[in-house]
Image (cartoon, rainbow, N blue to C red; front, side, top):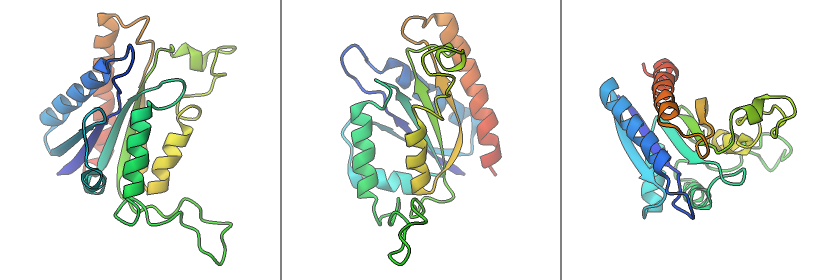
Length: 203
């Protein structure tokens, strides 16, 4: 049985109620219940959490699924705080031992001290920006993808722990163009994506 940790990083703040990220978690729960063969744990960064328990969840999990909106081209501050606190609490407790370097040659092997090898993670992001802002010549993100641009540091953070990246899913134009039809289309596409990317890791 594969063990899955789902983290809802959709912070409640200002005009954002985090509703879509809660919806994503509900899609996950339905998918994994119907798929069978999975044990689930969840964390909502808006709720109180215990650092040791959160570290134990990462150590327990085979797959971590992160859901986050993107605010001002980064993570919501409470989600970033969660990661800062939990990963720091995980030092020599299962998340990482060191930065991987040795005193005799400190110029090499940075980022190899993680202890979550054998685990995988998947990232979803939600955006006001349309997908075309990343793909069309002359548009804002200069044809740089979400994963290679804004979320590059997030992926290296997870690589630092030793986790392997599973292809993620990015939801666009959810503020000005979140029609029921588009949301339904995203639901269908996302569930198909889960089935496709998780099949290779379920053995």
